[in-house]
Amino acid sequence: MDRKTHGAWRAMGVVTALVTAAAMASVTPVQAQSTAQLSAWISDGWGGGTITSQPAGINCHTQAWDPYTSPDPAPNPTGNCTATFPVGTTVVFTAVPDPGSYINDGPTPNPVTIRSGYNYTWVMFCPNDGLCSAG
Image 1 (cartoon, rainbow, N blue to C red):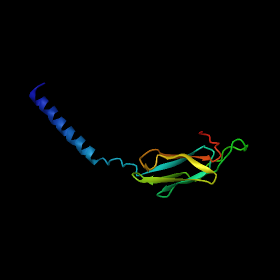
Image 2: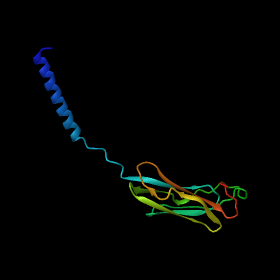
Image 3: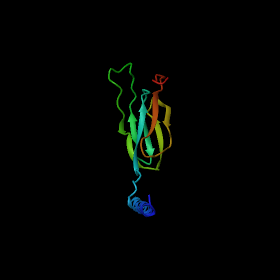
Image 4: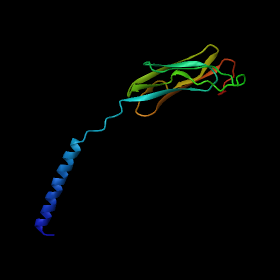
């Protein structure tokens, strides 16, 4: 390769690098997710109760259920069991058992700092009579 050709390739490389840098600088960056969903899961401990969030959004209740006396399947939780919060928000949970039930475990984790992707907490309510699916 002679000097003239080598110089042309070097100049072409510099121009290519400058054009690439300019193109990269003009690309709009991908925006981070600004909100994410949070789900409250009430484990099937056969007791009843409610889990709520602060800030407000989650207000999820389950009824006590005895699999030995009811031919029906366990009832699904009612209320808002999933809510959307801004990423970075710290959400604190309160679990309150219905009369005749107690909190066996949870809410866990508590609090939750909302991140992009999947966020959750869970709680298990059990009946006071000792019949609990976890124990």
